[in-house]
Image (cartoon, rainbow, N blue to C red; front, side, top):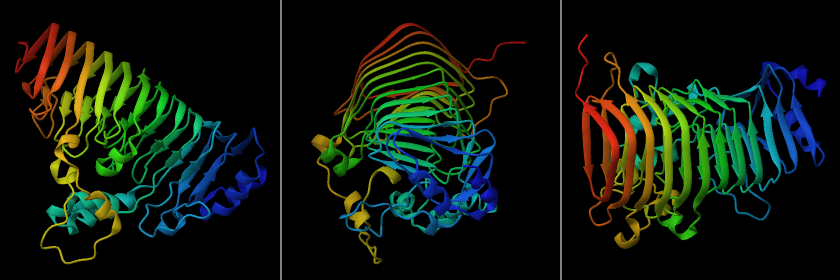
Length: 427
């Protein structure tokens, strides 16, 4: 692979050179990206291979959308509305390892500005500023931005040791994957919109451990499809363990949802720390998502300077969650909008959260801590027509500025829980 270093200046687009080298890796073989900076568009990995980012190597994402073409298989109809491919992609690629101590750098600033404008516009410019408020739900999909990594329908995936940063949108997205190990990943320098850390989307039998994450949105997120399409597909996210992870500002914690349509179950989250994140353990869904979230066990969390340690919002962010084409809208209507606006009957649209145990948690807010909103301990809200059930908090010492609010719950159990709200210790 030494000939690759001729392209390691970070200025020469070398997508085809890298792809040719990847395609040449035999079954069971290894591709090693040498030290240097490699500017590239979308790369596609294949089954039974290892992709290694050597120490000192940086994979730089191109700033041109044309370098991230939509991937489609032979015989499929090309969809011009489809989202762009990621920087690193793998489809139907079993026995795949991505490892090494190098870096995947999406050079996200240009894409962040595309979404919410330049810094001086205070996140009110870009496409977000041009869309009316009643089309807020459409902006994220219409603003085409490549992820740092997308793995889809892969069985036997190992992601280990590398760094991911400045992603245009989500850093690492695994969809319909199984038998997954993600360990010792560092995700940082993600201050742009929707720069999730690790998203497990309708995945099963996954372990995420030893990761350090700083991003602007969900740090680790379990998803299972959205609304009518997700309910029809009915692919759960299940058998997931997350532990020994450290999440820092501006991350929004470990989250279930908001895409919950296929259900999320058999989840164990433990021995994680949160420092300056907006949330710690979070559940979010909406009245058109549906799905059952159950058998969730969370334990041994250390939470410091987190605005909302426990946030269960089953009517989350209505302007984003509920898709409706305005009656007075006169512009073109993409097919994607029509798919998103499919009707979901209320009897299947209300999500259900049940059988959750959270234990052995400490949470504290320092005197000097500040945030845009008043810190609180509980923000739990479900529709009374489908309340949360059997939610247990035990062995906790929690303190914040306010208690918060609880609504739509049947069977909340508190055992050995000490709460201090609005309390400042005398010096």
